[in-house]
Length: 264
Image (tube, rainbow, N blue to C red; front, side, top):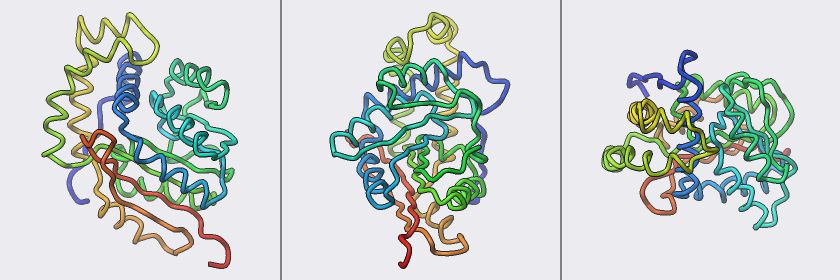
C-alpha cells in the first residue's frame, strides 16, 4: 500500500457537473448491464441476516442504478428492507430522483452533499460503498470504517477496480467503444451529455483517464486485511476477498464488517 496514489479528475471541485453526471450515469449503467456487482448481493444479504439491520445507506452513490437490482435480489430472497438511502459528495440528483421513482419510493436520497469520511448521521444501519474504495487512501478507509464502528453500523465496501493488468488492459481498450454505444441509454437522456460525448468527447476522455487511475489505485484483499489488522479491538466480524463477476470479465474486491453479537 506504499505505491503513490493519484486523484481522479471527477473528484475535483472544479470538474464540470455535466461531465460528472455523464460519467456516473455511464458507470452505473455499465455495472448494471454487465452484472458487475451481482457477486456482492449474497454478501449483503448475509450481513443483513447476521446483523439484523434492515436499513441500507449507500455512500458515494454516483448513478447507483445497480441498487435497484440489489433491492430486487433482497426482496426475491425474502429479506425485508426498511429503507435504502442514496448519498454522495456530488449528488447526481436527476439520477437519484429517477431511481427513487422507479423503486416506488423504497429508495430515498439526501439532496445535499454527504462526505463519506464524515457522514452527518449516527443511526444504526448497514453502510455500503460501491465503486469508490479506490478513491480513498488507506488512512481514509480506516477513518470510514472506524466511523461505522463508532456508530455501531455494519459496513460493506465493494469495488471492481484493482491493479490486475491482465484483466485491466482489455477492459480499458474496450471502454471507449462501450461509452459510445451505451451513453444514449445511460440514465436520463440529455443533449448536453450527447454533445460532450460525441461532438466534443470530454466525457469519454475523462472516463478513460479516471479508469486508468482507478485501477492503479485499486486495493487487493490482502491490502484490505492489512487495514483491518490494525484496528484496535475485535468487536466486529470481518470478511475480505474477491469474487468473479457474473460474466467472469473481472473481480469484485470486497470487505464486510458486522458488529459481533453480545456475548461472543
